[in-house]
Image (tube, rainbow, N blue to C red; front, side, top):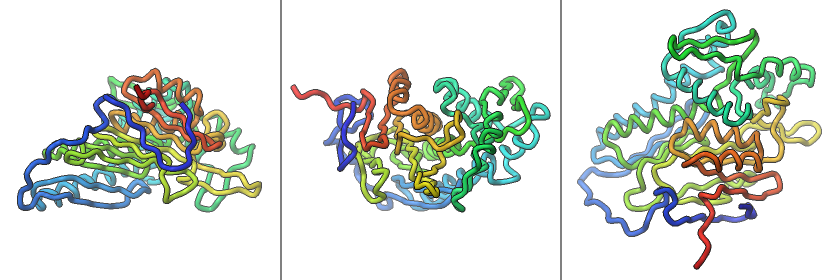
Length: 340
């Protein structure tokens, strides 16, 4: 389905996989210290926001601090910008032989491979072999010759996973894995698991474009706005949701305008090594953020037509794509029912 991206829209569908919230639920009686508690931080080069309902301030403060710490721990494992991270260690050593990695990193690499296979390589964590040549803060991009050289090392199949041994090996030297398109989703899932383990039932946790909603907002839906890619303070669509993950990839997150007036952004095509054209933003809705994070990048690279075709084959997953013509494409699960 296509609709114009101008203005705020709310999509509703009766029985939308039990994710849209019915009005009129009864609120539970409040205890003396029960309240919404909010925490913020910056980690993994992105703002972290957490809010949840708890009956006790002391518990809330402790749990909130522990959840925020999860993002710093994942950053220490999976950031390509840290020389001491596991990923940096892989990039230095895995071409010389198998390297043992933590269970968490192995899980993320497995999911990355799954999304790569599903999307025929549209999602590829070895894009870092070209991606490191870009400097978005300085507004610098590599030459065509540099891109061609790096593209020879972009191939997700060259990241060889041994599930029995828990090791990773690269099939050729010079590969640089970058988990920027999937690691934040993993951290969000870990944070939600931590909240659940402490009995929290209503929460919203986000890391930049990746979010998990735990339960509803105590009898009301969580209203999630999908930003208009060309207007920071405006939403293109608002969705009432509960108990889902939501991930958005946009060409407005990290970009600069080059000397020819073209937008150079951080979502690179593994096939060309250059910024993907034809799409402004992609939002994926699903069960966990590890999956939605990877899929949002994959659909962005595939484009509206092929991206929607892929998503429609996946149960429990929906998508909103805004293309470069300001048209909105949505999967069948988000289409409003026909009026009777």
